[in-house]
Image (cartoon, rainbow, N blue to C red; front, side, top):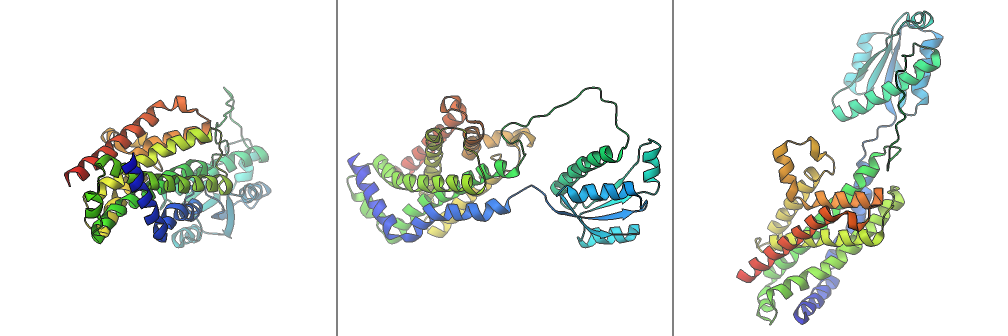
Length: 365
């Protein structure tokens, strides 16, 4: 332990002298949270729509008013012909066009189904699906208000959404963003630390010291673990303050899971540093190893259950997948540490393998 402590003290002094590393570990993650947290949002508001009202009745105006009151839509144009509506969608001026046919109010008076046509720009499938859901909800509300036909109710459904009753995409995406930022900063920091010593020629001096490989790895890991933990805790607090991320669980459990996750990330960076000989190569390798799997294969944005079965097996080696399960479980559902055995065990196994591989490769060198 004396050797590990000596290496850790040396590394802390190096971090203190290198202000860029300190900024990357502590302040840059919070900056990234502000930058990407506001940009990454699946909620759609103020959708620009055009209206082609061929009925020009009180009922058709009530339908248009329902769209304007909803807060989801802004009526940007009234068109009189189908060509004008098509041109607005082609130019991107309107995301959707509501077409109210002639005889709409008559059908309502005669208690017959009154059909509305909705044209939606499908160049972005996610936005189009969201807009379609909003349109269905607004039309259902407007139909009830203007006295349209109501289906016979066979069974009543009273849905209750747990943990995110407003279905805010921020609550789903911000935990993934925290895992993404923490993973990248931790991997890059340790990947560059040893390579930097290789380039400066100080690595040979460290290796000549009476320090075992395990003590060297621990001494290199602990300072970055402390700094990364502080940085990750800062972005967690910022996420709760600025993005209303709830905290229903224990901070102790959250910090424990975070520490195990960061240990695996730091071990991955150390393993990369044993392969790369220059900081440029180490940075590129660290970015590729940390960024793409965490972004695509962790369940951060894309549900793992919707991936092909072979790809779901691949996600089993992505540590961010387990960290996200534990993080969302603690902050959203208030799960205790004792109920997180599977993700915590997987993270601990990954950390042990990553640090073990790093120690073996350093011993050979």
